[in-house]
Image (cartoon, rainbow, N blue to C red; front, side, top):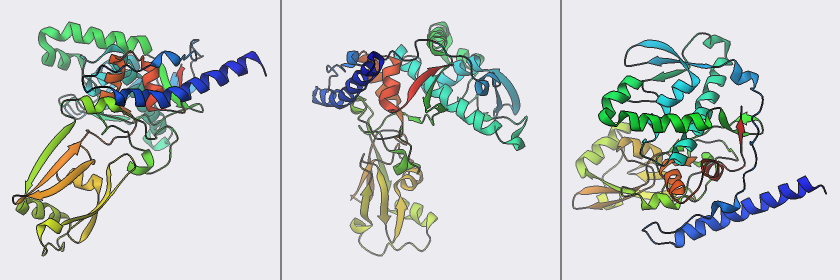
Length: 341
């Protein structure tokens, strides 16, 4: 066995042990966030040497985007696009290492979308991404940042720029292919498997602990719906839905994913997906409890978003505990590598 092989085995064992011990240490701490992630054992030596620019990226130095706010199509340099994309996904007040992890995830996600789009000859010269700069959807211009941030523009913009510049060109891969780098605001304490939410089984979109999410002030939210509005909303989907029984029995047969989200639920006489109920009642996530009390239905919701991939608040918490962006990315996208192109 060569020295290099032995070193690789040791690194894999250390990574495995860290993924077991870290959540246990984090969960055992107090709600004040005094528990520290022990990431020092994750010695990520890979990617220290930049690799030759690959042809699939080399031919794609710009993003062609359609701005719904203006109706115009813009060709935006990759790095310039990243400045305006990262701030749409994560506040500039977050830790720098969290912003770096978001930058790599965002670049991976949109580069993958662009590559798949351009592989279809029918899409030639069409915009790959549709954004709305007024609503800060996917991308925003520097002018819009100035309008929103005012006197804080220089501070926020420079922080985003430095974070993007420091990791620009880095992507997350699975066996040489760009991954589907899904991310969300915050999980319910455990991220979801791709197969439970979107379908399909991706080895890097699996359930991992994200205990920092439970420390976010708005981790739990409540939505109240009157009995009449509840029935009206459901009947808008199924007009023949039977609500003749006592309202206390309108909700039944709740089936959850291993991580906690409602996968299926019976409402009245019909079955719904948890994601459908989330959409119908504008819930922040599909991890919810619902009860009937005082002539209304009360939803208690945990987390925010679909729950798959990287938790943005989880990334922020890990950065606060001393994790760097690579450790964050490899935690939320296990079985992957970070490559420099």
